[in-house]
Length: 278
Image (cartoon, rainbow, N blue to C red; front, top):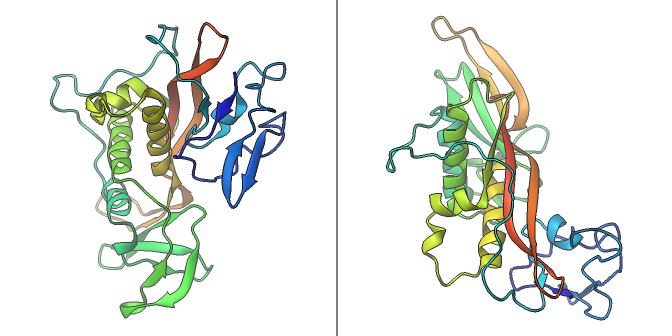
């Protein structure tokens, strides 16, 4: 059974290297990615699982023939406890870092981004009347030299789904119930995320489309970095933190189900996540 690209492909090129496609089946024509069915064999004889699906940032490749019937239940990695224990509410870590990251994920280019002395795109908030500051940046962001009023920078922001802000708050809720979230990790899977985001109600989306969306949303909060220069406030001493990610995805486990023809279909995702030092 071979695989094919879907219309969700974002041309990230992670599937192109031979280590990720041992048969060289992935081709690029007019900036469009496709998989040559004459060369693709779903990595049979090379790997146990199709590597293009695993390494694609949104798991865009799917088998050429859709899976028929129900998905077979399989053993999964145990996850952290579900949020919303009473079905309505769940506590979460609330701080200026959390709220400003929400602003970034929802307002994006509408915020007053500037370029610092190192040439990096920065969104900065003053702390305690300028005695300190907290700065945010995005990994791998291109920007132009154009400016508008108040030296604000016109930039080509990466596409971010507003639902990524919900993922950010989901991570914050998990971090709340951990003693040392900067040292300990938590585990969350696609089934939990699907419930939290209400995607189980989207009957118009296929299983593959939902998994692609979830994988994309889960990684977007991890693109935000922060640098903190915090002034002394009461009994809390001043401190500084060098630039670091808000969240780290330590591992993504891809769960596959094999059909009667031997083709492996992606049926689930499990994420191991840890908070940054902030």
